[in-house]
Image 1 (spheres, rainbow, N blue to C red):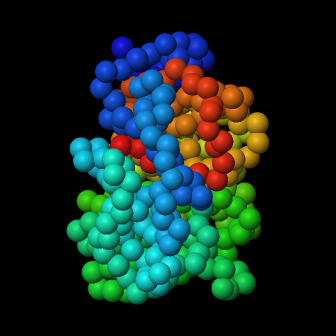
Image 2 (tube, rainbow, N blue to C red; image 1 turned 60 degrees about the vertical axis):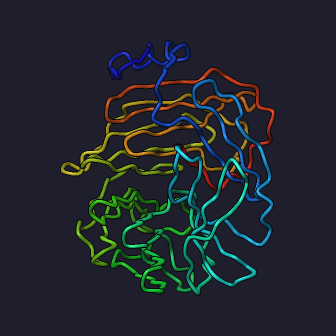
Length: 322
C-alpha cells in the first residue's frame, strides 16, 4: 500500500503512515559508515539490520559516499590512503567486506566538510564538495574538486562574501547530466540561506546567488532532481522537515515532517539519496529507530516498523541509500 502527500491532512497522514508497507522500494537498504570504520546496513522495508561489520581498513580515512550499486551490492567511496599518501576512489564490496582501488590522485585532502553526499561524475572522473577554506580569515564559499582524469586537485573560491564558520552549511546536490552543482550556504552578515549553482564542467557560476531571507536550517541538506529543488532540515533533537523550494520566488513550503527526537546530538548523517528518492533514519527516544523512504517525485512514502536500537549510533559520518 502506498500513500500520497496531502498537506492539508499532514498530521492525519503522520499518524497513519506507520502501518504502510511497500513491496517495491527504490531504496532497499540504508547504510551508515562510522568514524571507527563500522559498517551498518539496514533493510528499509522492515528496519532489520542486514549487516554490521568492521571494515578493517585502518590505513583509510573515509571522506564520503559517491555512488552505490544495488545489483552487485557495492559502493564507491572517496578516501585518503595513508600508506600511499593519496586520495582514492575505492569500490567497497558489502558482501565480501573488501576494497578495490578505482582511481587515485596524488593529493591528500585535510578539510572538515559537513556530512553530505559528495558530487561524483563518473564520465568526467570528478568528485567535489563545497566547503570553507579555513586557511583564510574570512573564507568565501569554496568548491574543492578532485579531477582524477587530469590528475589535479582544484580549490575554487567563489565571490560570495564571507560565510558563517560555526555553521552546518554549505551543502550541495550534483546533477551529473548537466555538471551543475546546486549549493546552499549561510552568509556571515544576514539571517538566511543562499542558493547558488556552480558548473563543475565549465568551472563557472551558472546561477547567481538567490537569497532566502530569514530561512535557516539547523542541519541543512539539499536534493536536486529534474529541475526541482528540495531543502531538508535534519535537526537531530527535533523533527526532520522537508521543504519544496521555489527558486523563482525564493520561498519554501513544508511538504513533509518526519517525527524525530534523538536524546542527544549524535553527530551523524541520517540521509540517503537515490535520484528522486530519499531515506531518513530517525528515532523518537534513542531506544528505537525507523527508516522512512520518500519518493519526492511521486510523493509515495514507506515507513518501516520501529526497531529496538541495539547499536550505538554516534559519529556515523557517511550515510547512503540504494
